[in-house]
Length: 139
Length: 79
Image (cartoon, rainbow over the protein chains, first blue to last red):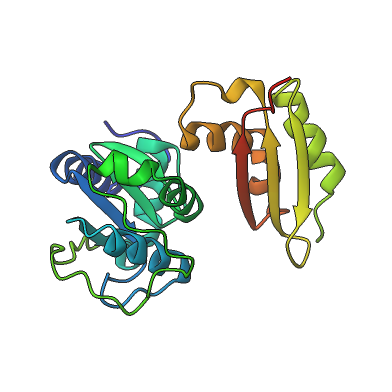
């Protein structure tokens, strides 16, 4: 598994990330937590998932940002966060999630009812009461 | 270091022959938006469409010329 030039902890992080993606039907890699996003893009995706009233798991990438960039780069060829995975596949980051939310495709993918059209952006302060607690990966 | 928008446009056009490409500076010369309509996108998920565009300009991401690239993709208009 080890490749030259890759630090020792990376295969472990990559394996953990693969497991998380497999185990959680809807998984959001984000900066911060759903309750306290630390990045505007992450906040927007949380807001959309809240609007869709869907259960999801959230992983705060900030404690291990570089190893997680490497892991998701290896797994999904994508290194920026947020990243939303549904049923094992990367859907996209903030702009794709927003585009698919607007078109109704995201609701279809998640198997939920699309909410009535709302011209305003989702309320950033909205809490996701049904979501799981944050998952932590420590370096 | 401002990105060369014309160079980025031709990098995407070379990677996706027949595509209609527009590259816009959204601030500071390193936050860019690429608006791309390409026949190659047919049947692909949005993320795969974005991967194609990003791959075309990856050398300019790697060398730091581009800090952030927003991507908007679509199929070419019919007709």
